[in-house]
View 1 (cartoon, rainbow, N blue to C red):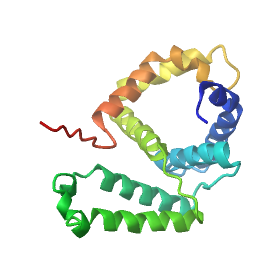
View 2: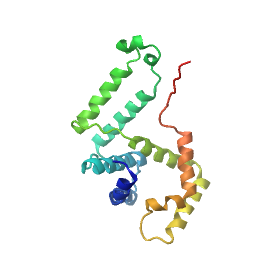
View 3: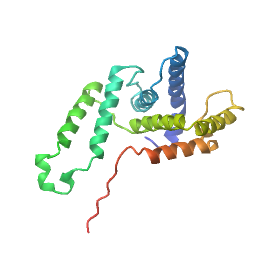
View 4: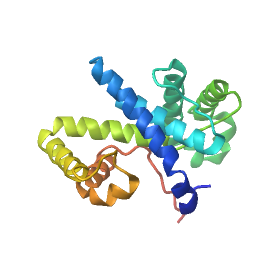
Length: 196
C-alpha cells in the first residue's frame, strides 16, 4: 500500500489536499483570524490517508469531531508512551494498576464512535504537531525563520506553482529545521527493554 510506486501514483491526491490546506489558511489570513497550524495539518494528513485508503475525507477543517479525534489520538499516544509497570511484572496485568489499559480502551471507543467502526490511528498527529512545533521554534528564532523563508523563496523564483515533493532535496535548511524540531520535541517515548 505504501510502496514507492503507489506513493508516486498518489502524488496528485497529496497535491490536491495541500492546495485545500493552503486555500483554508488563505481564508483565515484574509479574514485576519489566528491559524491553528497543528489542527489544520492534522486534518489534511487524516484526509490524505483516508482518501488514499478509502476514497473519502474523514475530517473537515474547523470541525468539532476532527478536534475531538485529534484529542483522543493525542491521549492514546500519551498512554502508549508511558512506562507500564505491567511490562516488568506480568502478574499485575489482570489488575491494570496504572489504569493505562482501561483509559486506552475509553479513548479507543471514543475514536471508534467518531468514525463509526473505522479506527484510523497513523502518524498524522505526529506530523501535524511536528509542523506546529517547527512553526513555534521558527517564530521564536526570527533569523532562522528568515533563512527558511529565503530558501523557499529562492526555490520558488523559477516555479509557477506550489513546491512539489521532488523539490524537497533542494531545501536542506528546511529539512534541518524539521530534524531539529523532532530532536527538540520527540513525540513518543520508545523504551527498549533487554533481558540480562
